[in-house]
Image (cartoon, rainbow, N blue to C red; front, side):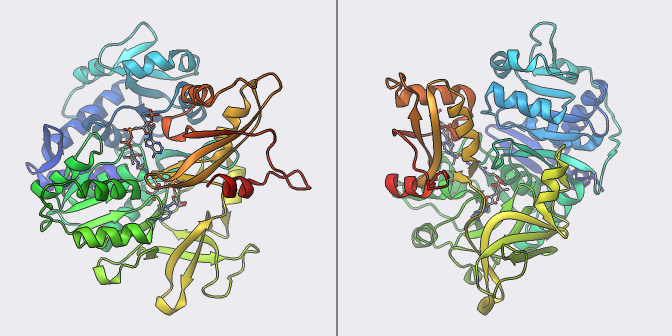
Length: 508
Ligand code: MCA
Ligand code: AMP
């Protein structure tokens, strides 16, 4: 089965019902389905067929969803890209994935032209007018599309639906191949676990280029035949208004969003009427017990925390019954998902002890694109090694708690930052001798990216501002250090190994 086909079937059942309200644009299920058909026809007219990778980098808009499901419906592979990626990042993803088509806007193309024009076999289409002979006009391609168009749904089950790039400890991003079965099994599990229905109205404030905003929230909503109120950008006051006045029943967000909602609550004249809301869900980063309790104190709602990962989709969730939700716990494995805690030698530790979280089930991706070695390293006997540390409470039905990470990873506002990638950028600068990137606690983002840098002889005049500007040219904003500390040398142990724990202690 193909995920886009399931959504199309749902659209046919829902017909004139409102599917998405994006800013002042309303789109019914019937209109949504026709748009997907248009987009699929246009893609096919450009020669896109089964297995072709189609990348897109666009601001949050309805067209992203039309395009996404159109790509899937041809059996092609969707590659959503963070709208803030810089040209060098973009070049890597497009070249590594062997993308056949890249759809973006004129502004992004203008910045990245030099980096992407040499990529072999890549067609670039721009929303609006084409710019010069190198690009085509996506709007024109759409206007030439012919309906009715029979979507072939040429891929399904264990064939790839999406590539999602995740960074790694080496600093080189890996394209996780996510299959139709992964998408469908996870959507079904969440549907059951959270009791989604076509009566739901989801407030959508997350980006559409990650699993959370695209698969869990947007696709989950369409899968259920529900309605989505989609904001282009998260603004706390507007979000409270939507939960108060627009009949939203559900919110899916990251802890930073909840933190900002709570801060805003204090400034609202009247407490919003949340009687229509049935569920607040948090994930992508740890929700602290303080945040859980403060939100309950203000609103009366116990946030439902769940745990997931790009490679696995959603893994575990707290129960729907509010009294079953527990602060700092991510709940229990979803239906069809198995979790085991593994000691470093792969055996099971004593119940209650911390180990690495391993996952198995139809939700688990098929491997990293073009990286068979990395794929092999990530699996043991069919179990996927998440790199997260956790433990299960045997007194509470093996309720799962996360306890940190075996992998070196900073999660800032729900976005993952791998220190190595930033260190590579900093150490690539001629003025920098060595650099260490650490995550420090942050009230807003949970963790913030901080760089500790030793400069080359003669480069002592280098400032924090210079380094930040260099990073801004090469890295998406969320990865850029928010603080830089200069040192003479980085602390190392007798073996020469960098001691980041000392830096974290010193600067926290
Ligand atoms: C934006 N900025 C950030 C972040 N977001 N810096 C550090 N960490 C961040 N998370 C920077 C921008 O580069 C910019 O910098 C400045 O902050 C303001 O940007 P703006 O776009 O206005 O940001 P914002 O609206 O304040 O964004 C905060 C946010 C956003 C809404 C919390 O970060 C967000 O949507 N986070 C959700 C990420 C997400 O969906 N993750 C799911 C991954 P400058 O001023 O220098 O230009 S999927 C996943 O993890 C798994 C599967 C799972 O379990 O869900
Ligand atoms: P990503 O690679 O962007 O999919 O991020 C996945 C990572 O986010 C996981 O491996 C966890 O480290 C983290 N994560 C997701 N949900 C939670 C949660 N509820 N609590 C703590 N960490 C989480």
